[in-house]
Every structure is written in structure tokens, then in C-alpha cells.
Amino acid sequence: MRNTLRGQDFINLRDLTPEQFRYLLDLAHTLKAEKRAGVDQRRFTGKNVIAQFEWGSTRTRCAFETSCHDLGIGFTYLSNSHVGIQETVKDTIRVFSEMYDAIVWRSQGPEKFMYEIADYADIPVINALTTEDHPTQMLADAMTLEELWGGAGSCKGKKMAYLGAAAIEPLWYGRMCAYLGMDLYVIGPDLYDHKMLPEYIEELEGLFAKYSPQNKLVISDDPNLLEGMDVLTTEEWEYTNSSTGDDHGYDCWMHYAKELTPYRLTSDLMKYVKNPDVVVLHMLPSLHNADHKLGQQLLEEAPDQASRDLIASGLEISDEFFEKHASEIFREAGTRQHTIKAVLAATIGC
Ligand code: CP
Image (cartoon, rainbow, N blue to C red; front, side, top):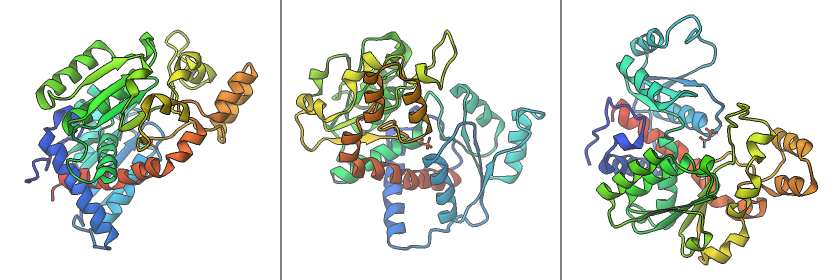
């Protein structure tokens, strides 16, 4: 297949065709095999990438940085520039366009900010996460499933369930499922704060109708629908309290704990799933235990023993279920490198 992504931005999966998504996955599989075989991948010597992360990142930043090293691309991680402080974003992007071959940005702002950057830039802009999409993560999840299920095309007809706090991430997974020919079941509490916006649902219904009319998008609070699922996933229960603005304290993580607990990923869920081969993914980080600063803070602020027990044993996924599926989850983290390398190689131009 021909590379039609050269010089293109990579902001939202809905901007791609299923063929372009397939091209990136095939390239990622090839690049991983090459790396395993010890092939020198420095095909982009003399190229440079600039990265700006407005939020913390472990996997995405490391994947971009190591991929650039492997491809022979120089990598600048910007941590203290004038951008937005005493220089406009537009001016900064025009400077980047003079010196670099691609811009990687993780934005705290809405996705339209990424498109504004792209308008200012003469070089590809790559989305390292916005609320509206995490396209490099979706490529990685697709690659992981293909590796586990037998290669290109093996996802077709499979069923994915997204459980829990389901306002945002199912939108990203829905695009992936529509491109791969998978069903997506979004199973979570019937709570306004944890349901996708109507415009998100409308977009996904349109994508399924266009690319995978044989597949289903199901949104429900009924865990009985989980029977026969091939893959389960979830995300942290992080929630911004719109009245207090709290997006990191105890209330942010525990506000809806009672309502979300029935949708935790645990071994108990298998009574509904009834598929011993089910794959479990988690894009990470995960609050599967409390052995970190945030966990300790939540334990200290917990009002009762039941809350402490829940926090210690894992919120969105229990510690025992996480460890049972750790090989799948950390394979998924590893595929971030090969899929991000494919995005760099395709957009910069191979
Ligand atoms: N999954 C993911 O994007 O991880 P980071 O936030 O660590 O990059």
C-alpha cells in the first residue's frame, strides 16, 4: 500500500481513511520486526522533531523519544519556552516550522487548538493526546490485539467492551473499532457525567454505518451484555467536579465510586463475560493499587474502611485482575513505541 500520509497532520483518527489506519498498522508491525531483528532504522538522519507536553506523560513521551532515536531523528523536548507566555502560539509554531520536520503536542486545551497549530505550521502536527482523541494510543491497542489474535485482519468480527467511566474514551475506541470491523459495547452507569455526549455517539454511529455496517455500537448499563466479549478495557475514574473545579483531589477519583464499582474490571466480571481467553487492555497509568503518592493521598482522605479497601485493592481495575492480565497490558504499552514510530515515519515521509 502507498504512503498517503507524508506531510499530513495526525490529529484525530476520524481524519484518516481505514486504508491509512491499515497502512500505519502494517508499517508498525514491520518496524517492530525490524527492530527485533537488529535492523538499523536510521532512515531519517538530519530530520528533527519538537515535542511539547502540557500534561505529564510516561509512555507517549518515551515512545516518541526512543522512536526518534531509532529512526535517526533529532528530538527536542520543550520544557521552558516562551510559548503562550510572552510569545504567541502562532509565532512559536512559525519558528518550529523553520527548524523542525514535525511537531508533537499534548494539549490541555480542546482539540480545535491542535487544528489551529496545524494551520500555523508548514510541517506535520501529531496529537499526543487531547480529550477528543488519543490516536497513537488507539493504533497501539489495535496493534496489540492483532499480535495477540493472529495478525492483520484478525480483529474483524471481534467484540470489545469498554467499562466504567465512559464519557470520553469510548469515542476513541469507537473510531478504532469502526476501522477494524469490531463491535464496541460501552457498559457503564446511567449517569450523565459518565456518558458520551450525543454528538460523540452520532459521530460513531456515522463511522460504523460508513465503514463497518455489519458491526454494533451498543451503549448500556447492563453487564449481562458482556457475554462472549473478546477484549475488555477501561480507564481511570478521574472526574472534574464542575462546581468545585476539582480535577485531582479525593472527590475527583472517588465521587462516583459507588456507581462505578459494579463496572470495575475484576475476576467477578467473568461470570458475565464467560470467555476464559478474554484479553484485557489498559492504556495506563492505572490505579490498580495504592502504592504511589496519589494512592497514599486517597487512603489518607478516605472517610471509612470500605473506601480504604477499595482504593487499596484497585479502583477501575482490581490489582489481582490487573496482574493476571499484565502481559497483555504491558505488551500494549510496548506497542506504543512501534506505532508512534510508524506515525513519525509515515508523516515525515518514508
Ligand atoms: N497511555 C498514555 O498516554 O500514557 P502516558 O500519559 O504516560 O503518555
